[in-house]
Image 1 (cartoon, one colour):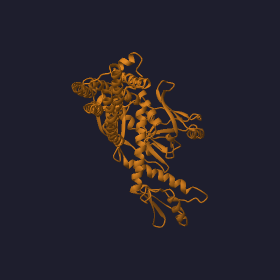
Image 2 (cartoon, one colour; image 1 turned 45 degrees about the vertical axis):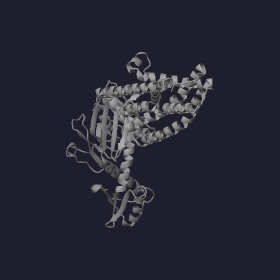
Image 3 (spheres, helix red, strand yellow; image 1 turned 90 degrees about the vertical axis):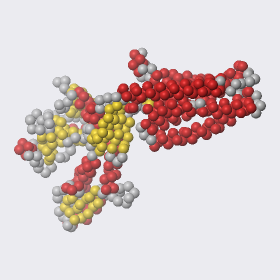
Image 4 (tube, helix red, strand yellow; image 1 turned 30 degrees about the vertical axis):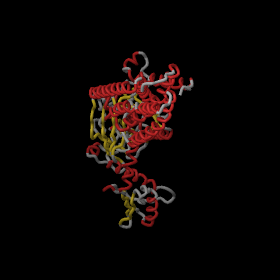
Length: 532
C-alpha cells in the first residue's frame, strides 16, 4: 500500500489537472472567453432543452416518390427500347393510374420487349417479389405496375438519403450539435439548439433543390401557354419572374444538364452588384453544358429549380469551363440558401413541416438553474454524509467527487458532447453513485481492522478486495449505459453519455486518486490507529 511509484503519482495528477483545465471553458461564459481570444477552446454544447432552439417535424410526400419512380422508369423504358441493334418501336407511354403502359407496334417483337423490360426490375428485399410487375394486356400492350414492396423500399431509401441531405444542409448553416433522426417510415425530427427563428431553417429544408437546365420551346404560342397546352415532348412550367410578364413558359421535357452533376455552389454578385448563385459542374456536367451552349447559341436556356423556372436567359456564346451563374429575383440570403441547398444535394422526396416548436432561452435558463440547484443540494448532502461517517477518509472521498465532476466536464468538452436536461439528471445520479466505491472500500477497511489487522494491512486489503466488487458493479452499469446509447435517441442518449463518462471517471477518482492520497498520508504520518 505504501509502495506508490512516483510515475504513477505523476500520471494521476496529470490526468486530473488536464481534466480540470479542459472543464474550465465550459464553466466560463462564452462571451468572456471570446473577449480574451479563447473562444475556440472546446466546451460543452447545450441541448435544445437548455439552450433553446427550434424543433421541426418533417413529413415526406410519399406520392412524390411514386411519381419520381414512374418518371425514371419511363425514361429507362425509352432508352432500353432504343438500345442495341434490334430497336423496338413503341407507342406513347401512359402513366395514368400510377401504372406505366405502352404498346409495341411490331407484335413479333413483343416477347423481346418484355424480356428487356424485366431486366429493368429489381428484387425487392428477401420477399421474392420484384419492385415492378410486368404484364401483357390485349396482346400488344405492356403494363408495369409498381409493387407495394418496391414502393416501400423506394420510400425507405429516399428517407435515408433525405436524412443525410437535411443533416448536410443544417451543418452548412454553422449550427452546433443538431439532432436529426428518422421517426417512423416517412418523418424526420430536426432539433437545432440556439436557433430561435426557424423560418430560415424551414425555407432551407423545404427546398427539394432539384436543378435542371432545359431548352425553351419557342414554337408554343402565348395562347397555348396561357391555356397550359404543350405539344408532345414539351411542358408548361411556372415562371414567376418572367420579364415578358407571362408567369409561365414552355420548355422541352428533355433535361440537358442536371443538378446531380454539381460539385460546388456559392453566393456571389453579378457585374451590377445583384446577388446571384455561382455553380460549378463536374467534368461530365461541364462537357454537357459546353456542348449545349455551343449548339444553341442565340436560344433561351431555362434554369429550373423544383419545377419552377428561375430564369431563361439567351445563350450569347458557348460557356466553357463548367461554371455558370443562376440569376433571378434574389436577396443575399435567398441566394445563399439556394447555394447551400444545391451544394448539399437535392432531396429525393419533398418534405413539409407538420409540427413546429420553438423553445425559448428563458425556459432553458430555468432548467439550468434547477439542474445546478439539484447538483449543489446533492453535492452538499453527499459531502456532509461522507464527512460525518468516515472522517479523514470522507474528506478524500469528497475531493474525489469534486474532481470527478470536473473531469466529466472536461471529457465532454473534448468529445464535443451535448448536455441536455436528462444529462443534468445523469450528473446528479453520478454525484450519488460516485462515492459508492469509497463506501465499499471504507467499510472493508473497517472490517479488516475489526479482524485485528494493522492500519496499513487493513487499508491495503480494503482497496484490494473492494476493487473486484467495484469493477463488477460498474460493468453492469456500463452495459445498461451502452444499450441506452445504442438504442436510445435524443434525451435518452444524452443521459447515457453522461452516465458512461461518469462510470469511467468515478472509478478513476474513487479508486486510484483516493488511494494515492491515502498512501501519501500513511507514508507521512505512520498512524497506529485510524478513525473510520
